[in-house]
Image (cartoon, rainbow, N blue to C red; front, top):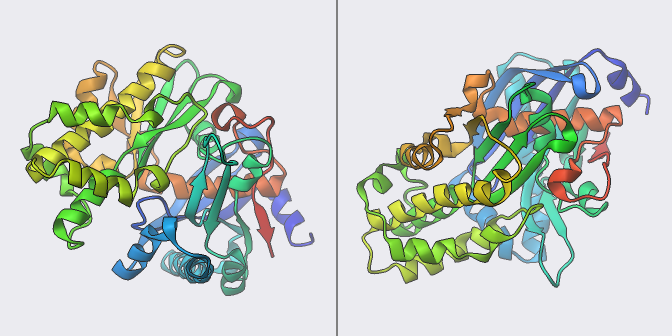
Length: 385
């Protein structure tokens, strides 16, 4: 406790956030200066970098959803080493001594996330051993955030809305923050924290990337700038099939991931659409991403909120075809990159976990029950010294 109390009492803290998302492209690492307390907490990014996974490591991460206990056990420690390596590299690059960093907040890598299943208990497993992070960096580690929300009746996701509310709320405006990572998720900000709505709308880049890997036999990872999809034509029959996916009509709170829209989903789709050109398949799946986002808004957001503006972050921002579809479907609501608000959209989720860790050390609840379905607010994360 002697290490924790001085951090809690500081007016300004230096935190390091680590995130590896469902796309499994690499580790996002951010150094941030955090000031203020409670709902007046602010953050300023000092440095950010993404440290890509090797192709072999990415393959192993993508197979975690069906891995055995031995593989998950080893990967927990291997990813812990990679997280520590990313943290140390960023501190070295920014010329900030570890002694000046107060803590690390690490999301880790999701191995499996189970929520909303009619016959299974909500549960989650993020790996990337915090004890390894603590041993390699010598810093206070806060990790394993999601179980704390599930323990009080939530789905364990989404957790980023806490940071969204701290950083991006604006009086008199209803803002939608749309993150296009592997999965598409949205946060609606209006007024107080109790008014926040957030949920996963469905896949973003996950299915598109999976199809590109299948078609190229692993030589390509994504549809660069959406160029292939931009050359294709929409197949209405396939789109209709995709839009009937049961997840899309589940009411919030809800979250999803690779368990539903991962490798097996892409393989099944590849077989079903074998008669389509690859460009037509990608065009249809890219439009499906945009249409499923809009369906989420139409069913669950628009009946409650008049959205003034939408800000987009995540890898999908670089997919011009996807953004074009979104702008067309959502018109006249303006859509802009999150960077327009002064925060690097690529850094947002890693920054969120630095803020979540700071809240933990302050003893502040950081789940958002209106987003996760939890019965009450809870302090999240486990502290490792």
